[in-house]
Length: 408
Image 1 (cartoon, rainbow, N blue to C red):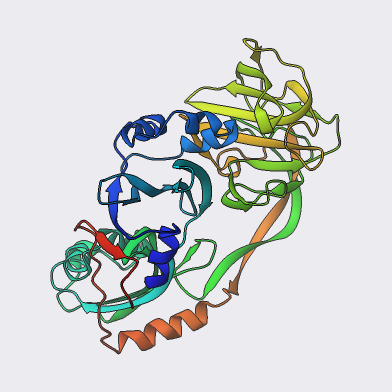
Image 2: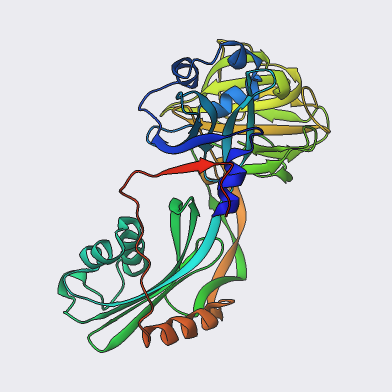
């Protein structure tokens, strides 16, 4: 905990200050926050266009930390962007000016174990004992629509056991807990649930997989498509990537596809071109507005073909792969936004066409899930114990006094 506080401060010649936890005001812009802290507009003007786009990822209600002196002047603030990165504002005492940066979130991660007998319902009991409603949601999610389980017919003293991990800063949880295994014993039968590192949930130690038994032709349809015919992913969507040119961590809000210079880029879907031109480190960029709040972005192009204001069809060539802007070589940076928020394109656009295509005909078989047997043994062993329950203080405000002259 002491190390976390020291990392949060990072300010020389600090004699006394106070860290407070706050919630980002609904609808507040970053520029309005700066004005409220009496920070000159010069700081906002010095922020790159790419980093300004990231500021749109600050969400209303998000928890952030401020460090202020005894006169209520801001010395530092840490404002989260997603689950892994955060905006850092820090006052440099020599110049009396503020510095802007985007850095990884520093947190602790621990595993917690819970065993309890049912008194009223899983939701009521978990909320009452642990004071953490997200855990009750996760527990029920493991057994939702499972044969033989009816949450309305659970009996008093039915057994619940689960293991979860939680990230925390300054003793309070950040981001969602991750329940890795769970067990519910009801009606004399034990039911299990496991989650792997990719977030996939399983009901037991085996899973059904598909294997090839033949081929056939099928028609495949989809509303949107990927922007290149041949896809070679060189960098995936993430909120934490070490930038190869800037040599510091920056979110990568899109997918990079490696391709030869001049490779045609196609529109992901029907829409209207709302931007066609140069965009800072993105180089030559085209943005297309689609229906249902979608906007797609195509960056680092060598030549732009579609003009601003024009309407394009899905699959229409709009430009060509290049390496303009801040780039280490020819590639396409493809971004997708829904109502202004960056999303992972891989989760919203599938590789499908309108043509008939030869596909594999698949059969199924059951194979063991790596690590699931060990997880099952752990949860069984846990169910026979009564470990101390960690109660989270997530409702009370948090503030910490710090004095650099104190010891320990």
